[in-house]
Image (cartoon, rainbow, N blue to C red; front, side, top):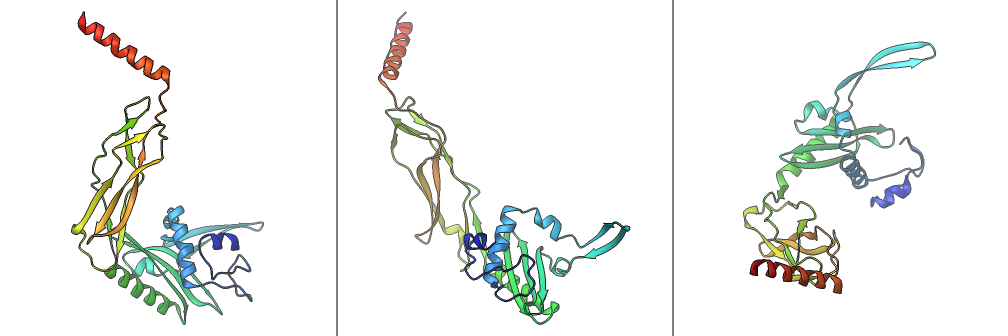
Length: 250
């Protein structure tokens, strides 16, 4: 657990047990909980399907038989906050009342972490305040109209051109209230590529700028392999062109 935490950048977290109960040396921070929460919802988004259930009947089976009882979600934001999507509450004598609250509005997902609240009402009120502040300050730009990529000439290859593809979509988070209509895009590609070309390698990039300042970029990748042409490839090509010329002459 501690190795995984360090890998996520949770530099101020030390796990002493796996249950989260109070013990000397067991500690974390709001930032580290946010990092852990982000990793969870990004890698396993189906967690929202479980943590947004408000009530559920559980059947408890033991050697004495089975009994049914009801569980209610301890995250009251699921009912109280319109954009809530999870995530986890917790409380101990030392940690007091805590919550890692996730919410989604207009395509923007936020995480608010509250720790050490004196009671459950204050932890939810503080989380709501943080989320509302985040939604009021943050806006996300997503490029939904990327230009069509041309084919790139290949020098010395068995093919004269190679297809290109974008590596990923592009998103940009702004907290300044910037005008996204002023975002410009610049496609940076060489005039040609030298064989051999490997599928998945970067050919260039698409650069995004706002107010003349670069705000990010995405790689443009070769979509196929192009081997370096050998003597036999040139010979076969010349032979094919010769045969075509003869056919046209006849």
